[in-house]
Length: 134
Image (cartoon, rainbow, N blue to C red; front, side, top):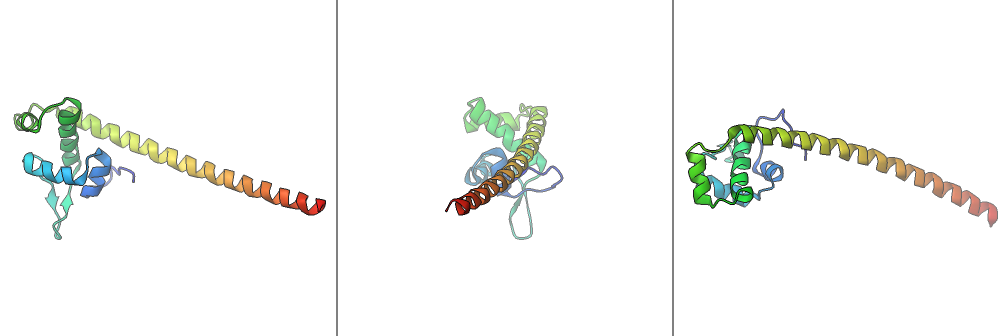
């Protein structure tokens, strides 16, 4: 699924795919990090914004890349020591990579279709040759 920059809200599943963080861990982080509080729709489903995604990416960076424990990461987020410009950069980088991936997938599908058509033509020619031979 492509990361659509025109969307205003994302489901927890979409955020999970975008960030690479399992949905259960995102739910846990909501309890641990008060700054990560996605809105809810009328059915109670989470509605993440681009800002929420940037927060998830910041938390992921603190915990997975920099190796902070959740307590320290929470203190850093609360203390405002998290680089929001870095989060915006990461979001932009994800957008760019998702667009590139989408483009490459389309090219792959087109190439695959061309190969399939070529193989069908070769198969037809081989069948015609076999009919002539036997």
